[in-house]
Length: 188
Ligand SMILES: [Zn+2]
Image 1: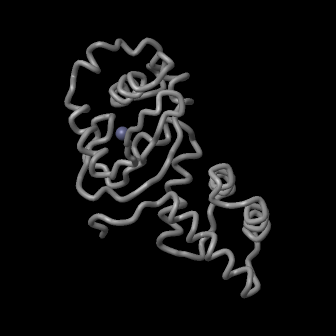
Image 2: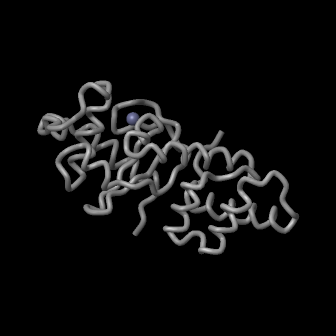
């Protein structure tokens, strides 16, 4: 059964407070020069939920499932507080899930932060365009079929659309948003 964002938040707040996770892991391969100290708690917590035992391998097991505004102020796995945007991620090998904020989602894959920003942009302006990376993800997830995927990539660079194309774009935007941007909670 799919847990609500509130349930995930509650379990992770409890888990965050568990310092034994941190002290039991010496960050075997944390890239010390390229990441500020703030990243270490994130690495340790994610490695503990992953199959791989190094950050560079463990991060590849995770994918972005959906994004939503935090219903109340929350703490990221890195310790950053408050986060306004919840990025729900899951591990395809261990089936674990976690939530991280904008501060850390880009540490997994560069494209994720672009996806988060695009979702928020289209939520504000329904006729805006999603990046090709998100269209490919939506196709892979079965949100768009092959015709819709090709249609979207084809009309995406066009500045003028026919009324039919415009309607179809809005329809696909709405569907992609509904899948990857969870609404609800206290939104500003
Ligand atoms: Zn963070």
